[in-house]
Length: 97
Image (cartoon, rainbow, N blue to C red):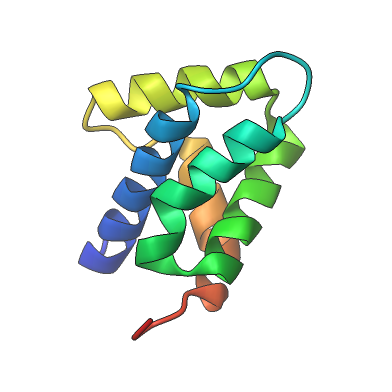
């Protein structure tokens, strides 16, 4: 995996780990969305992070998303769902802030 993709995936994992700390059941709550964006947006930009979160929301429940965040943060493996979302949204990365 290229260094750029690895860095982006790790940024997203940090966003997932942050999001795993908040929210309740049934769909992606505003709190979880906000926490994810606060962990992702400073490094990768709003458009990219919103795209990735939208892609993840299509395939996972909030509980699965939270569980993945904790598991991903605790390991060195990037979850497949995150990588699929990264590849699907890579054209939205904001370089140079």
